[in-house]
Amino acid sequence: MANLLVVDDEKNIRSGLAKFLVSGGHQVATAECGPRALAILTGEQNFDLVLTDYQMAEMNGLELLKQIKQHHRDTLVILMTAFGTIENAVAAMKAGAYDYVTKPFSLVQIQHLLDRALEVKNLRSEVRELRSAIDSGGSVLDTRSHLMVALFEMARQAAGSDATILLAGESGTGKNVLARQIHDWSLRRERPFVVVNCTTLSEHLLESELFGHMRGSFTGAVKDKPGRLEAADGGTVFLDEIADLVPSLQTKFLRFLQEQRFERLGGQQTISVDTRIIAASNRDLQGEVSAGRFRADLFYRLNVIPLRVPALRERPEDILALAKWFLVNAGARNHRAGLELSPEASAALTAYTWPGNVRELRNVIERASVLSRGTVIERDDLPDMIFQPLSGRPLNSSTDATLDEVEADHIRRVLSHASTLDEAADTLGIGIATLWRKRKRYHIE
Image (tube, rainbow, N blue to C red; front, side, top):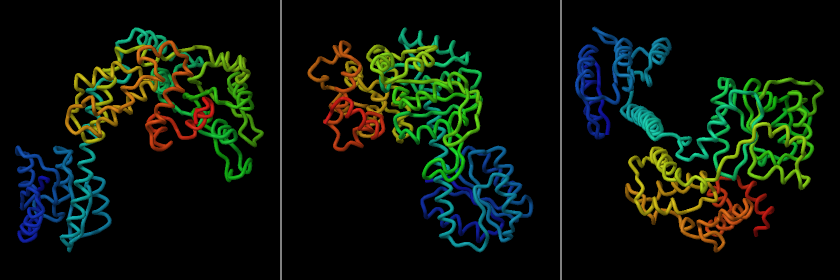
């Protein structure tokens, strides 16, 4: 269970608490005063929690607390006292006490308090393990692909400017991750990075999200609200799936790109901001322009610095590195540290063409980390769809298909294995509304 230290100058309280805590399965040491407690704490044993009296002769509980926090920062401290004043409580909490209990107290109170404290300690430990795992596991931006190296070099150079950037690439390739990295590389890194997904909101709601609205401008607008462009003043707005902007919003957004000015929905006052735009689309915007669905002048305004994020099948040398990175993170999140991929599972992951790209790989690894019975991810722990070709084509020949064909095939295959639309959307890494739109677009029943 836990290693506990009870500090109290009253022997009956000290021994009674120790006996109760030992009966709960804990290892318990006792001390009759602050100096003795500090001596015990400096020994070889690490203590999870100290339960100490406040009023003691040689060193009171507050002084002991301060010493513990100075030298044993990970040890939680609970103070108990018969002098339950607000001043003492405030002083104890400011000094780093986990909690404060007044005498007389029941053993049930102590048990509940101890359970909560140890839960907090465990959560803190898990957070540290997760951070350590992430730090030691490399980065999702680490790459062995010459395509990605060239992309990152161009993105880093572009980040130093205020120019608008247009990210192209299939769904799930990591355009949102790259957009965030560009912001972090830029001089705007200390200012907000705001994400707007153009597929998830209706026309009026999206206009309100982007530009803000005035009270009474539509049903439910009970007060003035600034939009995302305004909230990101000095920073960056990332517009995901820009191709889904309706024509009326394309016109208003074009004006913003030209002038960096706009009016809130229902407002008359013109607002000026300094907001950098990074846009992304998994559709061919030039094709959308030719089809009359996207304004040509807006496309050229967005396409100042075009960056194409390659599909995962175009950089197969990164598949296993990404899989291992996701496995470290998933293992830490799901309390499955130390997971590894078997050679057979690694071979299967490498052979698959990943029409859902990095997002699909992440979801597959997350699933395997939860469902695997041992510490090694075996081939059988991977979903069946990994081993099935796309619409009868061999797995490694899908590069001759168009982007729309690959996406449509992948959606059909995921839908055939999912029991609900929610499950399919989760596997694809998209929202249910986006899945409905894609089914309509590709005529998928």
